[in-house]
Image (cartoon, rainbow, N blue to C red; front, side, top):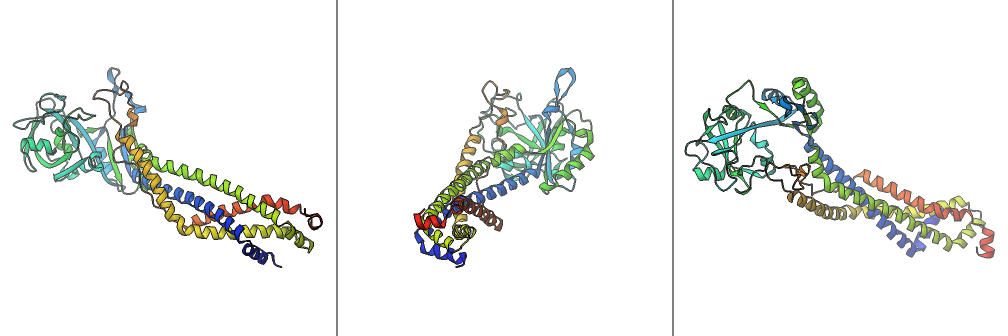
Length: 461
């Protein structure tokens, strides 16, 4: 009889053993397929995160290349705003911004909001931040700052004297969009009038000082680059800035943009780095890496354990079918065909288990993976939210605060994945199933090769 037909008859005749083997393979298939699906889903989510962050390049000071300035002090590098404007005009750039700041003094009847730090910038003094595009500020992009009225300052307003003010400062002084504020520069010699272009809300309480500048967040002023530069007494050409952000049209254009930036800026980029925010990527993808490693470990553990269980089942089957094999061998059946029959029986069950598991494994994996990721993301977000900056003027060493652990704004840990069953996933799990089936057959195959039909039929062994 053809060994293929014998394999089918054997599976049907031994229904209990077939169901046990099917159940074992079904568990293995679901677990391995879940591992493959979670691996694929997390890999896609990580790639999306890298692409979204990779489309944002930050020009920042290179701490490892700080030069020694006059008098032995460290001098931070500066670059002309005009050079950054040329870089921002490159075809790879969608939007860009840069900022500079100095002390600004309120004049006339306009007064600061009380209740915060005691005059960190002197009486009537606050931070005047000149920004090319306020919509790209980390606070607005993350939702920590909300524009309530008016509009964002953009590159089109670069030379206009306009301001964005916080709602508490606006409320105390009865200011609204279109009203005028008089400011004096840091040296007290230059005064200019500014139009309120918008009112924003900062969710931080008034008594909580800004960690970077030490002022009450309600008193922060955002102005145009040209407008705030007008308060500086000595203006030698274009304003000098120390940092910038470029949002590219496509993350894949990063290399081309860097090459063009080096060509245009040249030596002006010395002392700067121009890179994607790798820390933001790590912060966003931390939960993904955690569940990915867990799923991969569980997948291989289940595959190895399943192979061992199946090898045991097949070995027991060989012992139970010794007389059957003895008769077949006595009739002239080759041992290789008996081994092929065993392998075929296993592979048929494996194929059925794979087909059944592919029907409900994706939905099951989506729910389990999402629940696991949700817990990991919540834990990661709690760690980020619990981080506290040291007091203004402190390095954090005395308080045991590592500034390298400062969370990156607008880079929340990813808490969503989408599981999709692709043909290559079925091919992968099919290959794993084939490997497990052959491995489970290989061990008992040695017992079949040692069978002697005469001994089996005469002595029962």
